[in-house]
Length: 260
Image 1 (cartoon, rainbow, N blue to C red):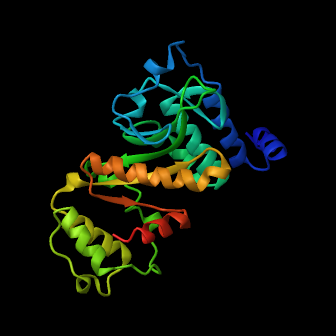
Image 2 (cartoon, rainbow, N blue to C red):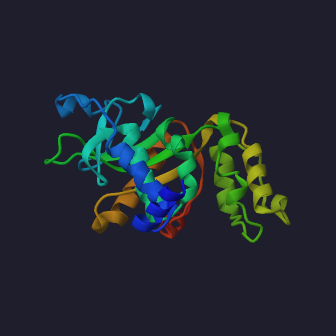
């Protein structure tokens, strides 16, 4: 183990970077059965929605059971949907942002309900994944990262906009809320109060690990399409409120600009 660590430091700088590259290597070189079918029958889903030109979005109930192949910008060959999403998560969150904690929780990105945004191009037989996000229902709220202590901070100042509370109350069959109810409460207390005030829990979910990939020149456009597609897909599935963790300042500004 000491010898492995020495080699990792020599070639990658540290053991964590080596582990990241090893996980990427395993995915890209994983034996997959790629059937040589026409892309129209293999890749297109009847439930997908065209959002703009050749961009499609959909909610996949369980990506581990999806047999379609997709291209990513991080691999020369197409991968099964589950592996493609894991690869994108490693390349963007772990390798780019150095969130090495995710190396121990990669399995979360390999299964379960996911939102996906993908694009068909003339040069590729299979579509290219542009964005994905993990969707978690209230049945497994104990696994939500939204309520995890890691994402809480006593110094945060809640944004208790009166119009926002009113729209949230109407959208989720929530018991009536006023700003006065949250005075002098911590952010985690407020968030829990909001959650337990929702009468119909089927109308809410958690959406996390939103990835954006593709051409850097189109990054903002892809971010816009991903947010729009995610919001539309969740609304169409009966989810009227979403608990999420946002790491991109541009996304916060986007939602502020949208007001309600």
